[in-house]
Image (tube, rainbow, N blue to C red):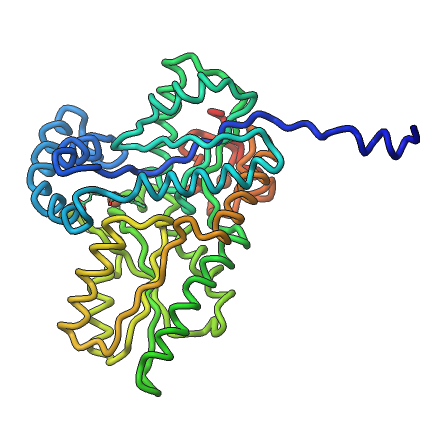
Length: 374
Ligand SMILES: C=CC1=C(C)c2cc3[nH]c(cc4nc(cc5[nH]c(cc1n2)c(C)c5CCC(=O)O)C(CCC(=O)O)=C4C)c(C)c3C=C
Ligand SMILES: [Fe+2]
Ligand SMILES: [Fe+2]
């Protein structure tokens, strides 16, 4: 047998990798709305008040919000579609990664089932050689990815799960992700232009989930990463200079949130006489904030304020181009191994110092983004 034949017969190693997908979770029925909201508002990453006040304030805010939230979930058929959509993403991603790895995807939701504890137990039972923690948030926030990683680490420590782990903070700079998101937005821009009377001016609203301003002021990199993501996405549009605006939706507490708000931007479009294409950013799956807030509430607001047209771009869900891009993100992360921020890909951290996702954990923000806890 020649050397060439011998090499061809050697199969590359297929690492046994558990890929853990994080998302927020949503109530699956009307009775789950109250405990879901309690889980959310008792999270110290969400409600930043002294610990002795938090349970009381959480109960008060959750109680106030239950009727409106229940109505939102009723409008979507009784519960959140987030878990079924995440399950579809998980099986499509798993099929892609299985080309190279003995891969299995697990889902860990933060505020409703399946929680991190259940995901840790399932991962442990599967006995992986490696774990890849992959948040389904392209942009890092201490309130989303940060909170999910804390919950995962606590659950893993409690269950004695100690396996080589690679953690992704975020993937807002990934070119394949940006190109795919831009293609989804461009499809809606083209459809809007075809549907509107010729000459109707058009504005694109990049609508991200909002965040209390104080959280950003204390160093959360979310707003920076949203703006960088939108700038990257615009590069792939047919007309990168198209009239557009980043705005923030879903304000959930009375304090000041990131501005401008999406509802202000919709009303401004009415005053300016421009039609709107709304592109959701910060979400990769449909849920109440796309299906109710964007598709019903802001559409009604646009009509009321004389906006000449209102179109909403799709979110990624299990779009094949998105899943392929996410698989690329996962492969790249795994090839870097633990200890490095896979977003930065070993390059200089793209986030301004002080706002680096893992700065709070005390890593070296001057060079590579090390992840001390993984
Ligand atoms: C202080 C409150 C909240 C912060 C901060 C916040 C940040 C944040 N949330 C998402 C994504 C999602 N949020 C979802 C639901 C949801 N979020 C809040 C509050 C805050 N979110 C509430 C009260 C709720 C419940 C729904 C409601 O009452 O309106 C969901 C799930 C929705 C579903 O349909 O299942 C997602 C997803 C991001 C990305 C983010 C910060 C960057
Ligand atoms: Fe939220
Ligand atoms: Fe950094």
